[in-house]
Image (tube, rainbow, N blue to C red; front, side):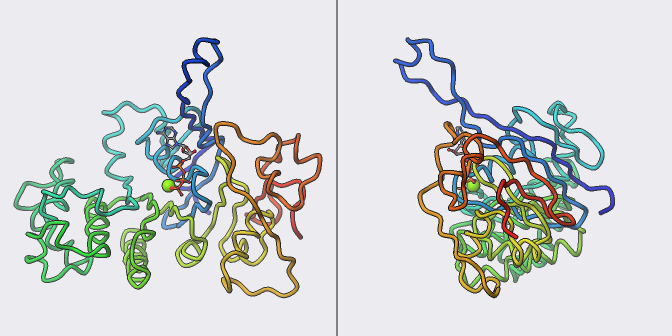
Length: 329
Ligand SMILES: Nc1ncnc2c1ncn2[C@@H]1O[C@H](COP(=O)(O)OP(=O)(O)OP(=O)(O)O)[C@@H](O)[C@H]1O
Ligand SMILES: [Mg+2]
């Protein structure tokens, strides 16, 4: 890979847990939810990295921290060669245009009282990239570009006039009007009718081609990750446990957790002679993660070592990394 557009090093985000009165009286030390607990990855220009994992494993927190929508507890974020981790609000401004986010719920992320055309034009005005008339012109073009035609009719509609899929097109249009180089797409198709998902993914794909857009594509659904991503990173309780090229990870998963989430989706990949790995229980509380390998209480392969020693992320084959004491071969 040539110089990556984004490099994230040992990123952490801890949220303080509110103490009970009793804990406060006993002067117990503050506790933290270690939502993201030391993750590192790179994304190349035009590359899509899917961040996959169960609810609560820290995907959204990771995406928002990378964009500095929330402040990291530790670690570094390097965007196009600039360390943006500690830039001031003012210094961040030019980067804000270049890095965008698409949220899960297109209804919640649009103001109900703003015409959708104005919503798409708005970022141009905020960033001082166009006057009102130019912004309207550009928003009309963008409406057409995302398939909301006739565009002049759509311009004057309000979010509640639109279907979920159409609203997500508006949200994508609003992010893309700034011609970003990088976007965090957080469960961008999860709340959309299954019948519409493919066309929304295709729309994102078309912007990848047009802008050479890099994406951190967050999803709990590995089947969606398979459709769109060049590489997959699997998260478990704040850590990346496996990362590699999509094909490779799906065909040769090495971490028992990855294997289990792949096996939970029938027919995503067909392999011969594979052992079924059954995982029970739920993701433990991130405020009190298990010792050693955080996955050990649910892992069918766990041994004593897993209870005490935390596995490091190591390269098992070209560009394929895993953190596990008992990798599957
Ligand atoms: N602002 C916050 N304050 C305290 N805890 C938080 C905050 N935001 C997230 N958390 C906690 O951090 C952990 C990770 O949450 P996050 O939303 O990042 O997970 P996720 O992988 O995106 O889950 P989902 O698939 O449900 O969207 C959870 O335990 C969550 O309760
Ligand atoms: Mg989330």
